[in-house]
Length: 355
Image 1 (cartoon, helix red, strand yellow):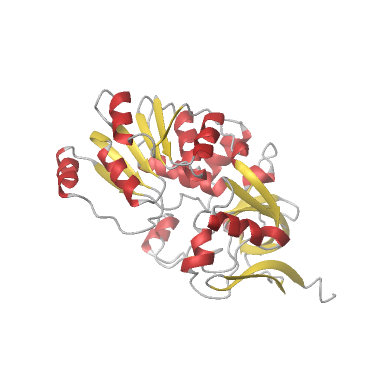
Image 2 (cartoon, rainbow, N blue to C red):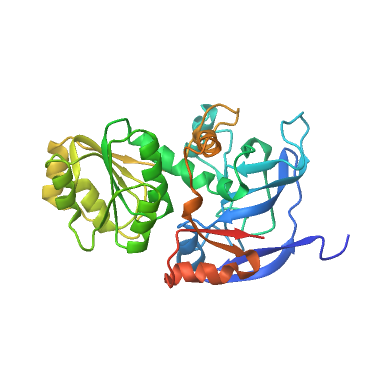
């Protein structure tokens, strides 16, 4: 095998802010694992601080955890349902299998997990290896571009489940990034009566309108609490989803929740939040549930889970995430796209990288 054939292109994070396009060895396939040729990898909002300000758990790292691809090689002792050439998505959390959470299949609560793209090498590259237990086949009717958005769509679905979202409710989503937009689309699928969406970037609100979300407001121009009081006759929303990770929007979301309502904290916090005493008092009197959410539910046994629900909804065209994709870039030019996202020098929603 030639030198070139044994290596692959990857975006390697050497230190905070030091990202290079390099040739690195193609990962070897361990027992129980498969090697996947990456077709598309989405850039998550969390990837930008990972690359440019916070770093990862160790260096060097290849980031990227929202991806689809094709199995190129498997190393499996059992008769697996997967074979070379299959189109797959990959649950990026690699659970320990030993802790109390893993024993009951709640992998997102695993005490000692690995994670593709932050703790070990991910998919800003040509190939990745992953446990066969973490793979799901992509239905024929779903393109690999769409399939690369399975992970954020599963996270959005999980957040609504944590919020006990149900038919006939009024909900507010703060933040119209990809996850906020997918959350709003899922809420529509679930039969929510009113979906009120806030952001400060007009293009994001326009994109929401194109995706069938009508009640969109720029909370730079309009006070979100006034808007919500007007639309709910002063009652507030049954469910508020904070999807921006900004202190001010968390306070707005908490303020907008009705008696007995819920708020789900979905956005990664950009900085510390101080809650006013009178707001805390109001939350107590209104008996508001404040719920955290992280990641999504995944079944290693092929049972119904957030991931399979997403793929099924995409296959049935109930969930259409294609309008989210604003940029598709080749791996060789991906660094420019990542810098654009960091500097916000151009409007973007979902950016897909393809080798």
